[in-house]
Length: 452
Ligand code: MEV
Image (cartoon, rainbow, N blue to C red):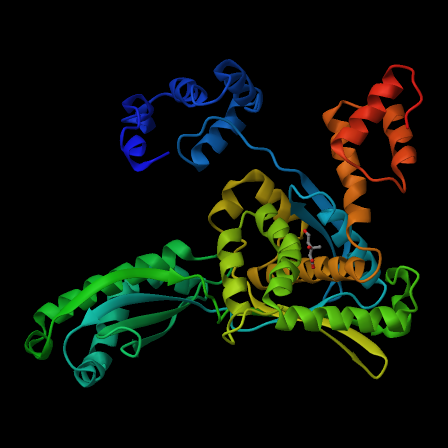
């Protein structure tokens, strides 16, 4: 499309006031964008829930909701984390993620399991502003301003304080080395078991109003320069909310995962693979993606914000200035260890965790953990996924496992019966799985012919 055509886009595609239409009308309009509007509307209707109460709840989670998009909800059993066994719920569309995590969890459950630690679990956010006056003046007035900021947010923090949380620190940060006149007021918050996004953002917006008021009324500030608030928002870079997790065993105990390789050789290959991910961004990105296969699946299943968790994890992976592996692996005195440290801000009360019945189910199945415990479980799922992925990569490769699931998906697409599935699994063991090959196989099988 050239620019002229782009500007000439037909008006009929622009829908004014779409959000005010009723659902059926929205569906009709949206379906008209599909190649077969009738079919599109039929699919959308089919995936609505028959229970109107359930559907109403889900419609309310978002805007312009037409229908639902189902994702598989699976569980990985045998997660031994800090001495406690968990049945870990995982929501993912990627075949083999749950099986890999479960296999890894089972392996480690016989070897002490996963051990995690958390720190203070503080969240942070900033008021970003520009100031044309001197930094010294800002520093001078800041103690007084801080008192006003704290007093101003007292009504917002009262409830959080009753639960043992609240604001822990307020500081002024000079960012002038990056942008002339750029400063931030940083707030550090303890939001207990809640993710606390609304709480933090409310406090920060109140900070901004108080700051502007102070700049416009304090004589030293009025005569000293001009202040403009640019924005107030929490940071998803939760470097004060860190979890460390590790798993270790004797190298000689690794045989069940070494794919027939001597355990020592397997462990050394594994450590080398992780070292490669530490120095090579191409490998690090994929390596960390494998970790987030496990992390995201549990974060989603528990109603937490996977975009926030991912963003924090990747920023953390690049904290040295070079994007690197989130996990590290070592062999020392005949012991193999795999460890990982990352920011992981999640909640177990409030928001989706309380509203979505499946999130509630997940948390219940996990024994209704607090936020710190959930951080440990999620980090363990990430490390388990990493162990399974790298373990497969340095032995038989990942295609073997993927192909089994791939075959199952293709057979599902063709509506294969149990007998056809059994025949296909036998036929394709050791053969390359592909859409056309499976279709061909089924066609012959169904026509009475001998496949292959
Ligand atoms: C696939 O979803 C994840 C892996 O690529 C991770 C990795 O390469 O470590 C297998």
